Length: 511
Image 1 (spheres, rainbow, N blue to C red):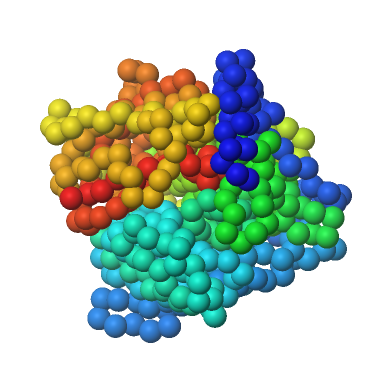
Image 2: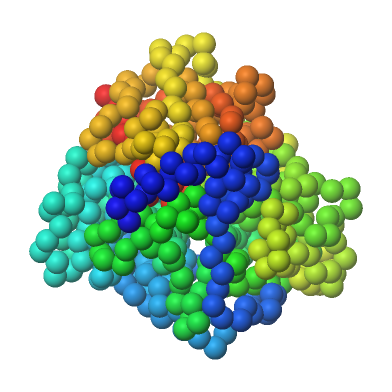
């Protein structure tokens, strides 16, 4: 859509915000930002499809201290909804893409080849990554055979690449659940909706020593919502189907919500589990949908979801939850002890923020007698906390819908190369994030620690190191940040992908 058309919509939307409504969703309560896009085919019954596990990608070669990978981005037809085929944009022919399993301190070089019909950008979300491999939204990877696109690239350290590009990941960071996805300016929402997302897991010796559930008991779960056309294709309300157009159709400017929940690319799947402990790496890779995940039934005594990690790695100690609120891009590593249930029990993972078809996520069927598993240690990962008393600067970022500019940070829509902050490497700063609506705010390069919400204690889901914080309507949060190692241009932005595409991003430069 044109910027003039977008601003006309936002002027009306800003007035509607006073009553708490925008894009068809109530924003001032615990509900969902965004507007539902209904599917145009009959929805399958839940719990009919086995849970798929994304394949692990093998390196193509090894050198001293470095593993080399290759991924081809291409269109593939997938079996998602029974009876129809879904053309998807994929990493390596699958959705999710293949999982990269890495070791802390061992470098990975991933060569992406673009055989899709449009340019792409790859961002390793949560990666401690040099600027030229971070996936700056203007550092385009053009499709093979495309000689154009120079007018659409610039400002980033990676520049323009044709056909293929190597991304270098040093992995100088703690064990953590990371993920990779498209990050092209203006069309991230469309590209991710079409299938460009995958897991990237980092392990280290500290994690290895804890005896956590591993191998077949360590399961990544990518949760998304999607809508489908009558022919099985992914529906998405793109503003303009031309390759270089940006944004989403005006009614969906506050987020696109689907009516089918996919876990690892399957609709409402079922997983047989032994009566023992499992580790689940929960990732909300939805464009805009928030989830309140809960086991039904709860185990005796409650606390069935035991959190052991957040975006940036393991917590100091386990935290038991009855439910988890997960905003787009957040990760929660949890352990579920199925020995607390009788064999033969079916346990649903439900979404208490959903209704109808979006209230169900997946289910687990407990098989066999209780198996042996080590109890969780009381202490997990011990790391130094950032000291806000030693902060060298305090910065404020307002995430707002402006009648004159639309979605903005500090009153400005995104312009590549326009810098909002210049933090010094190795120093601690306090960043104050102020929100009008629901905004999951993501910061590139290094994780942060949540200090407070509305001048009170952090929320119950803020523990550990985060790279995405779920800001609630009319809320101010303070976080402590410290960037290290890599100078260059990085991003702060809303990870509601429709907000991001409609200019709720900003550059910062580490020096």
